[in-house]
Length: 226
Image 1: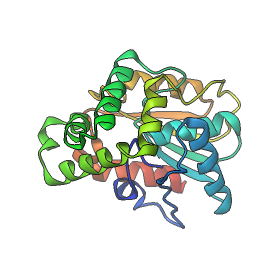
Image 2: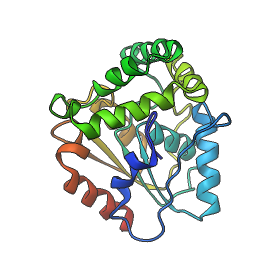
Image 3: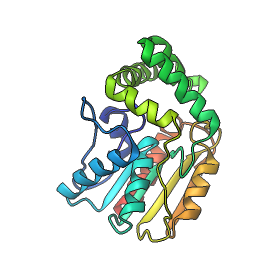
Image 4: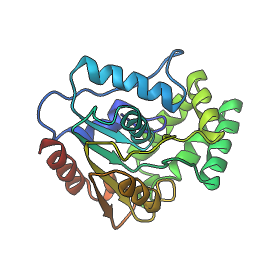
């Protein structure tokens, strides 16, 4: 499950080392869900269709997975939550960032929105062609009607989980990165503490997909293959 405005192309590198059947879930179009309840419902339907007992979620996708776990605690055996951004609350700073995204999306200013999204990446890679292309793709998706609906709900403070997670039976790997303001380490620590069978791994620098890709892929594939 990709992050906010993400696509399968953004998600694929994280699942490339996992054996077995891999199903990538991307939600686009007018009927795409626009809140965590809808995302969780749709992702659970896909998982049920393929009898999946392992799952990976990135940022927003991690939030949707948390919602699934809170509603159906025994649904998965092993889970990876990569760079989760929220649990039961959304920080005021993040809500301000989301509100700025809403304003840009409403104006149709794709360039400004892509620049803002690019600022979530480390300075060293922001100007690279892959980074620019990824930010432009995300901006286009978020400026669509369904993307704007999702942004509005998130900016209003919608959070992934409304109840406890103490009944979750899955082995959960929570991955965070130091220096990532959008996905704070403190949120990852809170999530790991709320789950009975969780392990936390914190990379020393932000954006491990850029700076520590081999280590990240080995970590994810090892967890989901166990």
